[in-house]
Length: 104
Image (tube, rainbow, N blue to C red):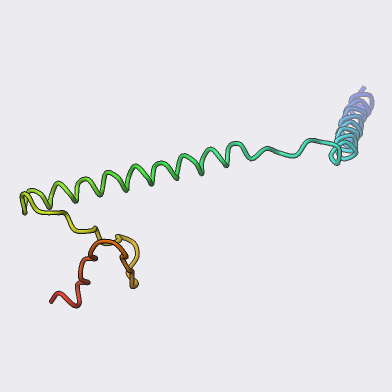
């Protein structure tokens, strides 16, 4: 009786292994003819990140203007210094804010 149980288990295991191999072999043959994966999700994330940055910059600039107007009512708001750029920068129309080193 026990010999029959073991032979059935081995038969099931062999069938499982063979079917598994067969499934993978079929997919490996089909793989070159599959459609390439889309970049839709990646592009959506990039577009959302871009517009989040644009809205964040607009809000930051508006808060800067409001703070300046509270401290200097009626005056023209000078250009806002770049937040994440510490190097030299030029302004062709308008006046740039003096750097922290030169204003002290």
